[in-house]
Every structure is written in structure tokens, then in C-alpha cells.
Image (cartoon, rainbow, N blue to C red; front, side, top):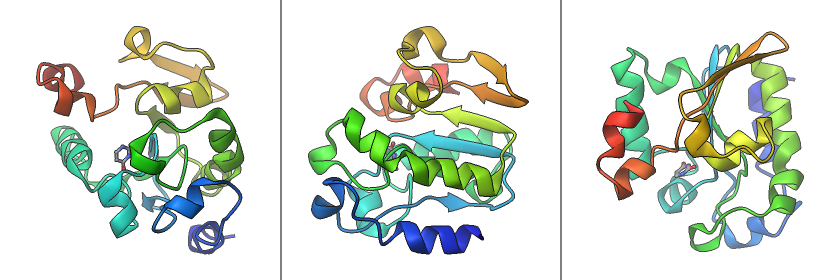
Length: 168
Ligand code: URA
């Protein structure tokens, strides 16, 4: 199955309550051959409207972070733990993440990235249950031949300016 076919299937998903409140499913975007996969929490308002991941204010900062290591978003793959916007940007619930998880797992299977960058605590917990993001930011793990590089979510720098430097 190609990534395009997978995303076409994903866009039809109605498996959880999030789809009802969302404008559209946001499967993710980037290179199908990406070595690096960034995983955020869930689409925000702008992402929900445009159907693309990280295109609002947090996304602008993510672009800046990528540029700081000479990468563009087309070089990587950007996905979410839940593919539909939680109403009012609330946190995704355990059951919503669990229901959505097969989509991310299938993306991982197709893209087969070497490096995962979970952005923030929800994405982190997909890989390390119960982990605390403030203890894990910047930590690197290797598991089954894959590298995990843990980062705060870029949105934290929008709420707290001093976090920009920490993320950069
Ligand atoms: N937060 C996310 O996790 N993803 C987005 O696309 C925007 C904000």
C-alpha cells in the first residue's frame, strides 16, 4: 500500500467521536521516504481548516526548528497521535488516541523512518508510557534499531518565550 492510498483510507475514518467535531481528517504530510518522523499531538484550528499538519503558529516555529538544522518539511514526515482536531483544542483522550493509533502505526510501517521525534507529552507516551516530558526533552533512545529523540511541543515556545532557546 502506498502512503497516498493509506491517507485516502484514513480520510474516510469515522471510528471515534473526534471526526464529528472536525472539519476534516488530517493524516499528515511529508516525504514517503522520510528518515525522520515528527509526531505532534493533534491538529489545531488552522490545521483542521487546511487539512495539513503544523501550519498554524506552532507549525511556523516547527519550520524554523527544521530550518535551523537545514531541513524543510518536505524532507521529513509530520504526523499526529490523533488525526482529527479535538474540540476547542482540548487534550486527546486515551481512548481517542488508542482508536487512532493504527493509522500512525500504518504510516510508520509504510514510511519506515529511522528517527522518531515525539513532540510533547502525548506523542512521547506513545513510545514511553507514563514518561514526563520535562524529564525527557532532548533525550535520545534507541529501540529495535530506531532512534527516538524527545522534544517539547513547539507550542510551548508560543506560551513561554524563554522556551524558544531550549527548543532550538
Ligand atoms: N499542535 C499539534 O500537535 N499539531 C498541530 O498541527 C498544531 C498544533
